[in-house]
Each structure stands twice: as C-alpha cells, then as structure tokens.
Amino acid sequence: EDKVVQSPLSLVVHEGDTVTLNCSYEVTNFRSLLWYKQEKKAPTFLFMLTSSGIEKKSGRLSSILDKKELFSILNITATQTGDSAIYLCALIIQGAQKLVFGQGTRLTINP
Amino acid sequence: EAQVTQNPRYLITVTGKKLTVTCSQNMNHEYMSWYRQDPGLGLRQIYYSMNVEVTDKGDVPEGYKVSRKEKRNFPLILESPSPNQTSLYFCASSFTGGNEQFFGPGTRLTVL
Image (tube, rainbow over all chains, first blue to last red; front, top):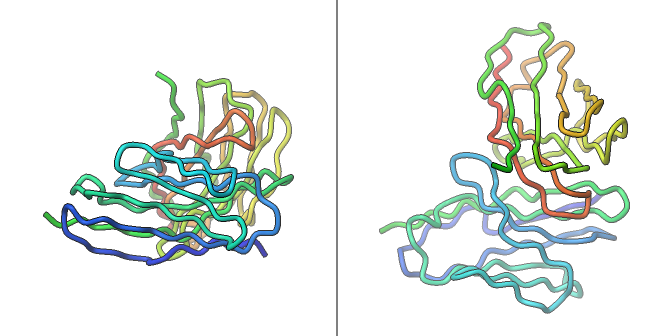
C-alpha cells in the first residue's frame, strides 16, 4: 500500500527560527512529490519535486527530494507568524495518476 | 480569475437525503478530483477524472458517485449520506494527472 508519513505532526517555534519538516514515503513508483500549505482554507501549492538532489527555492522556503533514502524535506528560514499553517506532502502515483497525501505537519509560529 | 469553485460551502443534512456538491473550474483542466479531509487522517482521494467521461476510484470511494459530462464540471453525489461522511470536502483540478493540483475553497458537510 502506498504510504506517505510526515513528521513531526505538530511543531511550535518562535518567530525567526528555522524549521525543517519531513516527508517520508513507501511508494514503489511515483512521478512527483508535492508540498502544499494549508491555512484556514484550501491547500495552496508550494513546490513540485521530480528529480532527486535538486533543491527548489522560493523566498525563505526550500525543498529537496532524496529518492534513494525515500524522503523529502521542507525548510523554512527566518519564520514569521504568517508561516503558521498545516504543511502537506503528497505523491503523484505513476500510472494511476492518484495523489496520496501525508497527514500533514501543523506548524505554529509564536511571536 | 482562474479558480475552482464549489457549492455549497456549508451544508447540514440528515441521514439518507441525497445531495450533490458541485465543482467547476475555468482553467480548461483535464484532470479533476475530489478529496475529503478528516482530523488525523489528512486528505484522502475519493474519485478522480482524467478527462470527460473518464472517472476512477480513489482510496475512499464507498458511498460516493461522480460524473464528468463536461470538462469544467465534476459534481460529487452522495445518494444516501451517513454520519461517517461528515467531513471537509475539497475539489481540485490540474492540467493533467501529472501536474500540481489547484484546490477549491472546500465544502463542510455535516450529516446528522
């Protein structure tokens, strides 16, 4: 069974800290790994990773995929209160075109 | 504005009363999908559609039906809702099944 596991499930830090969110998976064949941010509403797209070892970056957020060790990380530097959200990791399953999500990491940034 | 819309946004109903949640996108996307989100379980895919008249089951299809008669619309039908279908539902779309998906605003459904 395809499985995506995120850790930690919950994280509370102070503004300005750097955080690393983890996504590991047990999926035999996937096209891409996606990261989403979900605040009080719909998930919004952050990154799509297809190749191992290539970092994607957008402002203070960055992400990388390791296909050998079967995980991805999402880094947020100099966190701000507006980064408080649930961060979701998902895999697009090859062939079936299904999307399998992890449980999400609830990140809280305290001022 | 490019968007995915869902209606209604909130719905309280009773067991057994058929309901439909509509989903529409204006981006000419081929791929559309429905998810439910429950605490501790994350987002789980109910049904998806690769194109018009092509639909397939996701991980939790029991108790749901879908149809894709037009490219822009992908309604979710609950023929006989039960309390365990109380959840937050999201519709999403993408150019193809291999691209990032854009989500609608969500429909919060309560079945009493």
